Length: 541
Image (cartoon, rainbow, N blue to C red):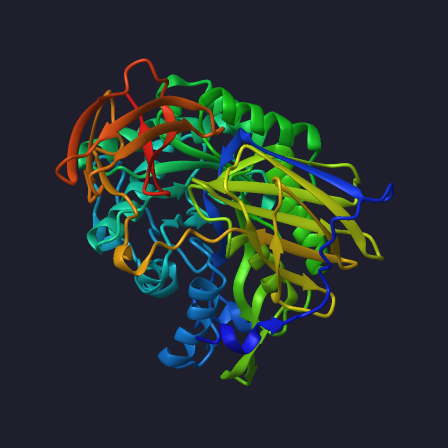
């Protein structure tokens, strides 16, 4: 793995001390107060040989794309998914020529697929990309259409529903049922046309039953809009409709302008309907500004997933939109450059895993910003020091037992994922000094058992059906004859069900009632043998 080539060993820089001074920053972490459940980090996608990646034209006449080998592509994929730990992909489609033009016929209930073109970057190249990154850990992918067909209007939502269903079915027929489908990209931005919330609502009400009839569980992401202002305007209309609401799997917005007031409104809307809120597109030319942006949406607005603009893009883009710049001469690939945004994001994405829960964390200094997360008995603490000088910080942790040592890694103006000396935790507290203008991640490692008992004891389980209505089957495997704890939490981290499960034969199958729980997204966790495994379940009736 290339990770060994890019990690820096830093023997100095974090200074541990037990001495308390009046000037120290105080950070308090409370693992008993749980907020949102995290769903990962990702990027939007243009496929490698899309001419747009190297500044070419994507509409007629289409120019040549990047010439790059499969092995060279694999190197980039390994960097993004194996090493950076991204788990989400948002294919950007719909700007590469029509999929259905002209309209196949005037009957939206009769689809002539011979009139649809899914070739190359219109759709099939994205499906191929997903087939390569799922083995690398990607579990969430959702195409977002930049422009729907030019002949579609607000007066014919039936035609949009037919078209969107054909796209979703194409993924299904190629072997990949979409977990999510974004209704469209930025319906509040003139580039793809202005589409009102009433139109999107009606499209979903028509599309949803088509998915039900086909036995497809794909949930809809809405509205994937320009900013929180535009997103809230449309989302409140859609979520107020009981039919449309049940097909929605996430609320999403970008950060191009907009107000903090409506970021709060989006958070509250998600809480009201128990659906997660995602930030699905943005970038900053300054990597540490981007790091602060990640902190802001997670800590202040309960966003559970954060997606950067591009994972890779041509080196002609110099404003921070991509984690990895693809270098080229003419159309020939010549190598890559890893940008600072990659390392800053990794302070989160490599350690804050899907299923972990954000816990309360407060700082006495507004320029020392902290978020903390727990996953069973493990903890991750991410701290940004925005000061131009070092800051000594006293940490106090409540609600996690048996913490004795924390690992630490730092990205600063001069370092990338620098490995720091272990931190000793005594009496649930420690003191350390943060380098100026840096972001540091502290994390615990799972407890290793003795050699005689070294087998993997992580609890594994299967849940079905998913989505579910009122009854859920849970099959638990390999509990090693111990008592496990089954937890169901809502999207805000609130425990709504909890019980103990005793295993005597290493295998348990339970029929579990979800009656009394409102529709929405939930997380089912099994805690056993000192580890925790989490899966997501959609409840819809």
